[in-house]
Amino acid sequence: MTTSASNISNSSKYFVYFDGKTIETTVTNKAEIVNQWVQLILLKCAGKPTVVGLDNEWRPHPVPYMSNKSATLQLCIDDNCLIVDKDIMKLKDEYGLKCTKSADIREVAKMRWPGRFSRPGLKDLAREVSGLYMKKPLHVTKSQWDARVLSADQVEYACIDAYASYKIGNMLLLN
Image 1 (cartoon, rainbow, N blue to C red):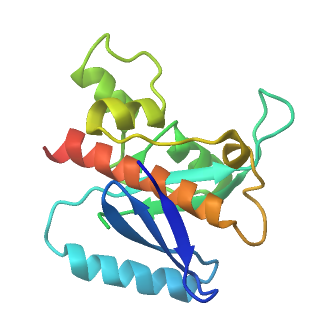
Image 2 (cartoon, helix red, strand yellow):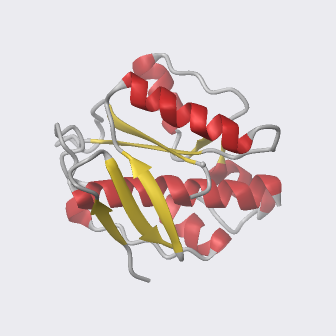
């Protein structure tokens, strides 16, 4: 499966192609842009049960058992709080962010299929639960997520991670 991210005229909008969909991706550090995105999503999802795919990235620490602070937060709802790898705890500990009605998709998958998963990662869950095949290139995984401007590869990677969380959560929690 091919994926690509294209930036339209150096704006904060990217279009990521994955899973037969075009995912419009907004990249910003401005509160007003975040607010506009949230308002649009609220209108789109009004009154419907909704799963939000959530992920975050951080710059790898040179000491394996240590971790840097989260550098990005990704949310995805259809082409739209769900937690992978205890990210909710990381955000709560670092920034005081709290999510209500959250579920860790790893734990939900382990409860649904006891013995099938021991410590599933997002890539494994995406393949096994929703048939998504994700690439996780090491040069992107270990890249500088705290860079002032994210590369197109980072935007694509971050978008696909959040989309996979959304898709898995939708299948596990709403289907």
